[in-house]
Picture 1 (tube, one colour):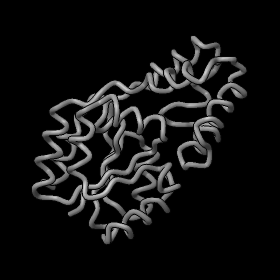
Picture 2: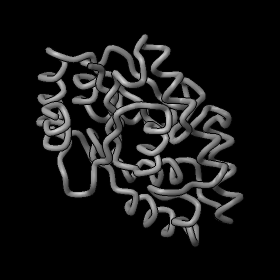
Picture 3: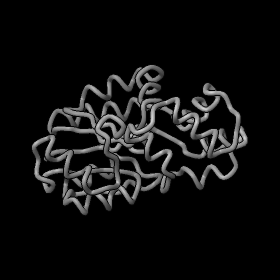
Picture 4: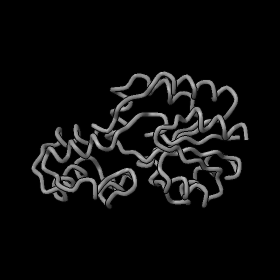
Length: 202
C-alpha cells in the first residue's frame, strides 16, 4: 500500500489566521475572502502552479489588496502561517517508511518551500523519508482537481485504489476520492497518527 500525504495541516503545523492578520495589518482588507483554507482567488492559484514568479506575486498582492507594502513585508506576512514541524511527526513518518512507500503532495509555492528548507531544520529530516515529493508549483498542478491525483498515481506507478491519501481540506479529499484513491479527511484537533493508524488497520 502506498501512502500519499498532504503537508500543511497534516505534518507541518500551519495557521491561516496568522497570515490573515498579518495582511490586514498591512492594510489588505478582506484578505480572508481572497485566501483561506477552503477558498483562494486566481492570484494564489496561479502562484501555486508556477504561473506567477515571486515579483509578479508581490505586485498582484499590492494590486488586489490596494496596499503599498514592500516585498519583504509581503513575504513576512505570507510566511506568518508557518508554525513548525514537531519531532513526533518526523518520527512517525520515519516509522511508516520502514513498511510503506511514502509520497508527499502539497499545494505550495517557492516562498513557502524556501522557508521550509532554510528556517526549519527538521523539514530536511522529514523529506528524506518520502520516495517522491510533489510540490504544486513544480509539477504545475494543484489539488483539489482529480487530474492531479491520477497524474501522481501514474508517476509513482500505482493504481489509484492502492493509494491512501490524507489531507486536512475536505475539497482535496473529495478530489482524491473522485480519482479513485482511498482518501481520509483529517479534522481539526485530530492527529494524523490516530487517523492513519485506524485506516491502516481497517
